[in-house]
Length: 289
Image 1 (cartoon, rainbow, N blue to C red):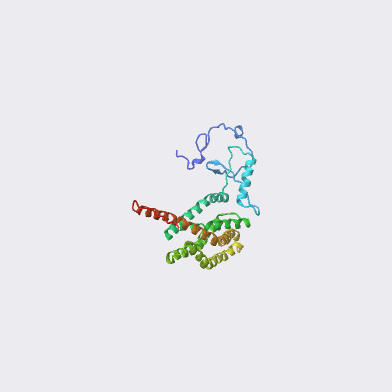
Image 2 (image 1 turned 90 degrees about the vertical axis):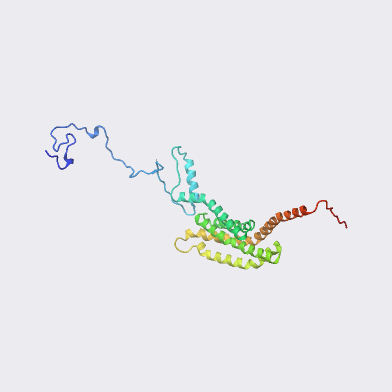
């Protein structure tokens, strides 16, 4: 006898195509209870643990950092058990990670600039003079963002990086002229940097105004997505204004102080060599008026 063509037609009791014996069946109600209730269509997991997502939107005038602080305060107020923990995901997590990397990026940019300027000037001192112009630009950018109630986002950080490249050209113009005047005409550090500030004021002002006017449309906010670009323009303009007001005052002072510190070891070394080269037993001659 050949087996049936369709095995699905066999019964569960005998395996034959047609049941020949009566089989006692257990009803489903004997060990199960049927009912209807609402269940989730899917179960989310995060790091092999059950997870639920609570989404929120920002109100007008509320930044993401303020919302994160409010959520953390609410989490502390309800006193959640220790086996329940919360964390930010999505845009909030990306903002938190970017804020943690901002200082590292700024320090890395400063180190690269110092190395490049040190190679160009062949000095370990003059790059510090150039870098002293950057704090004023950073303070101006932060104050401008606070004035317009804007968050220091990753876009504003990009504006600070642009300021690093724009603002340091003020000190470079002054230092280049002062060093050339010292080496070619034998001027002192004070005379050289004073003449550099007088002669380089016009190109410094022109380049600063050009950069500020170029960033003005970003700060005002034209077109689609202008709210994303506004912190960039505000940070650039605020940093340029602060650096323009302070660069011509701080750069000459720092240049003269660092020049004195640079010359002091050389003078001490020359004096020690002169004292060592004197023959032993040479009497000291004192001239009295």
